[in-house]
Image (cartoon, rainbow, N blue to C red):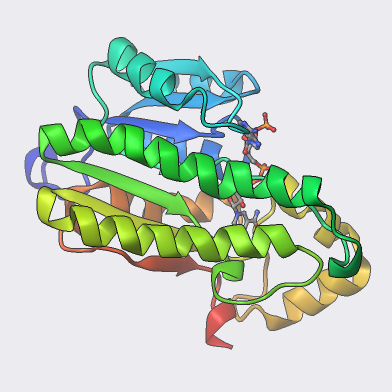
Length: 254
Ligand code: NAP
């Protein structure tokens, strides 16, 4: 298959990935670049390692400094992406945060901190990018959901609410925009080795219980997400709208 008839080819596309300095966002940015996309990375920490790997793949890279705790930077992020790389074809709402505490003691601050990044900013960044994509008549938006888009979880009330919320918003945007050339979908990672899950992996009992339930018998690696991201970012998924795709080693099957 040559590049022209490969439905997974992203050559000539520009992808904006939030939180691409580390973890799943970094792996997604690198997978998209390996498929041919140029990458804009928006977040608080400098994405130097990601930049080096994207440039090594022969793709262009732009770093956009932005704190996604509020929606204040969303318009600027889209404008800077277009200015630096010439367009915006793909948006990956990956940046996310988590607060762990028993529900009975959970604070409003921990509720808002998580909901703002994981749900509110993801929606308004989708809106800002979506306006450009609607004008262009094409685009791909990928939200990062979770097993806790399907299940309740334990000691993570705002995280569970935000991940149920992002699954709903994925379907809502798909309903509104599918007929206008924009695919909106989500990936629901299982239990992956990143900063997000350090506390779980350090807790011997939780680590053992989680591993025992995963049919693949291992925690996921960040790079396990790459293929799903390329699929949902590419023409291969042009008739895929509003799905929440688990990449979970079989967790939900059990
Ligand atoms: P991670 O290593 O902690 O990465 C989180 C990313 O989000 C980092 O780049 C972080 O930037 C960024 N971020 C957080 N708050 C931000 C803010 N206010 N402004 C800008 N950037 C912000 O965890 P991860 O596992 O890769 O998480 C990526 C996504 O996957 C999240 O949405 C998470 O909920 C989801 N997820 C993870 C798992 C898992 O098992 N790991 C499972 C399901 C879903 P800094 O590094 O600068 O803080």
